[in-house]
Length: 126
Image 1 (cartoon, helix red, strand yellow):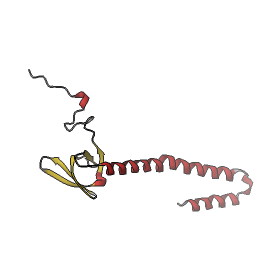
Image 2 (cartoon, one colour):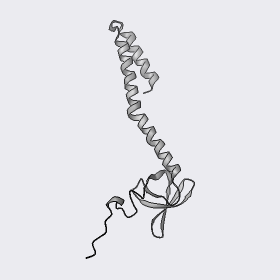
Image 3 (cartoon, rainbow, N blue to C red):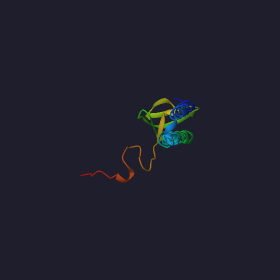
Image 4 (cartoon, helix red, strand yellow):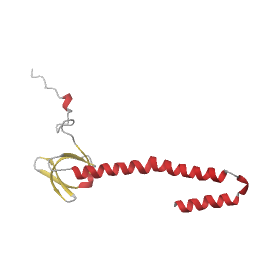
């Protein structure tokens, strides 16, 4: 339902009920509040996530460790336009779309072994 159509319904309802007095203004303010709530709860966060995703895709470079939307971890070997070549195992590369990259792995926080850098302990050699 488009906004001009919604407003025409509100105006029609207000013109039919002349005895209501201030109810037209209350209804109009209520519709405006709903529109503002939808913007701040739905549209604005989605735009922020889209902006963050676009920044990530521009920042990806060869040698970065990334995770795809499908949960595949890999190292970026080559970038060819919108296509990224990921090395997921030794001598195994896959081709994925740049838009399918979910995030870049920070090696200081999440090393390739999967164990957090602060939690790394030497196994006992007894």
